[in-house]
Length: 502
Figure (cartoon, rainbow, N blue to C red):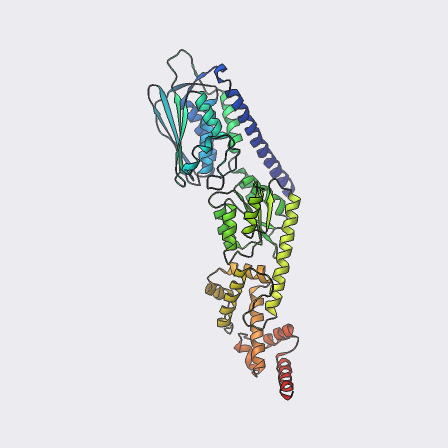
């Protein structure tokens, strides 16, 4: 049942949020334990067994993104480490590699050992990390902001914990990476001396630990995206569409779940994908996060407002950055509304309704002014985006060239404007509250009126302005001007005569 599925989706979202909170608490407690690491009894663990366990645990996640994990052959070594520390080190790094690596990406693990230590190099083909942030990623609660590194939002604890675990085990960790060229984390750990202590096997307790850490780190494979895809969307004509752009899958799911009963919800996982979707679909409103990979919210807003096809779309910016400078920056880019996280969903819905209502008022006024014009280039006489006026000028220029062709279609005009039919239709409706047939008919009628005023007969005018039927032309003309073409001609002639007599 749909209503039960909706409840299930919400409960799954709550569970994932709770799991993230538990992970942060678990990791913070781990820091406190490391302060007394010397009092913890170490255990001998097999590196080969630990890596095999990690690979098996991550296999569903790798398959969900068609990623490939390769562990190159090596001779197994025993490590004398704090219990569960190797699992936590490997899980955190491999989880990051999975998260930051795109579809069809590659992840590899290379082990190099000598007499005293082993190096575990975990490489990915992901987005990479700029050199200036290499030290920052290992600091507690530090997240690299406003760059492509800021992908799935985290608390900035995982890699800091990894470094502390390495140091507590008399080891170290190094990062080699360039932005856009993947990353390699190399963990250095000491090899256990010869001992009679047994190597700890992958017991059920260890399996439970690694499953817990894996579940907390990355959740179920793409569960949020799957839920978004199954949300019911209303497709009735006239339903407003909202594009939600956020790199957090749970945030996209939550917003879709709240809005999809009133609006058609479109989703994009980053600014770059959002820009592409906005130009293709021309939504009625856009909700965008600020901190996203590939293109952040500020860059996205700047590009949207500078593009002729999307300049009219209202934008609501959602961000954890609630400071004055952040708000001023967003407003300077013509962002229509700014909402700091955490926000109230009821408030967001009301702001959406208000912005859409304002947009409707503007489009109706612009449409009425264009519809009542004489068919000549129209300048909207109230505040309007400059790019909207440029679009209007180009549209009327193309109509002036082709309106007299009875075979003129939206496809012909959209090609002349170098946009798609869908883009043209959505732009006209959003900016002027008219469909293409309405716009073309009104333009032709005003051209017909001009010709009638110039003395042309109604029986000649209809075909000259692109109507193929005299009866249909007369019907449309009377509906628009309140009189038949012949009456209009007579009225204008009498007025002209009266002016001459004066």
